[in-house]
Length: 336
Ligand code: BMA
Image (cartoon, rainbow, N blue to C red):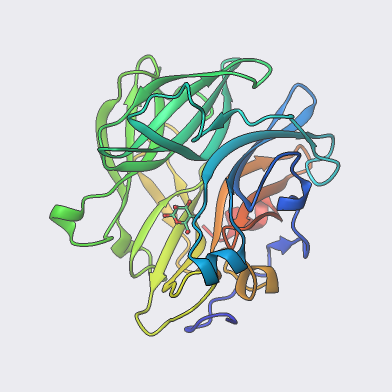
């Protein structure tokens, strides 16, 4: 299906690479969809941590109702953050790992960050009793991990700020208050921690009603970037229309995912200084609107600031591949 209406456009300051930077065919193990990847610069390389859903394909999904067999999280490295990705031979975590806690179903949507020399991953964790947001500490070689903190359900889309603020670790998160807010009226919250394990002093940052191009829900995407004017923060925003029908492999997919931009106060990031009231990135390339598992979805999980002032934004396209968009940091700040 082509781009859905109302037509939303990517802002001209964003340059999208026309071809994905990672696709399923690149992985050294079974992969149907590779998407929602976080990326950091670590020890002279770009390190990507991505989600992989595996075990079916479009034909089997559509004609035999063959669902995905599992979800894994894997690691790849590149010298330039664009191509030449070298993949670890096995995933870092896998929903079919026989040694995993039977309560846990799967981990996904990884956001990687280095803080004070340690590597952390924020993940969504589906369990038998609800969706939890969790933080894992990673080994230096990214070959092993330990979950050090997990929220109560329903919460996900956690991202960590890259440094302590006022002596505390800080994260953005997206609880899912279905009972009290009605279906999918979800907002962005912030919590603080003295030790990365215990989280509290939670505050609302941005409500879905404050984003004009979202009629459904919003959430954090990637760790914010520190600038002189404030924390440059990307969000995802969802609009839904009941008239949308088949829009990918599923019988029907009615949502569209875009990305927006806001600026948070440097010393108290629960304070929103500015929100850009149009989408920054919308699904408008063929790979985002006409191909893939869930079309009209762009879902960033990684954002980097280069010394040149270039911002690299890594996003899942159609829940199917990893794409890269770039912009100048000053052009982004000019919107806020
Ligand atoms: C969200 C998450 C993401 C996914 C998006 C679009 O709720 O599950 O992993 O990219 O939906 O399907």
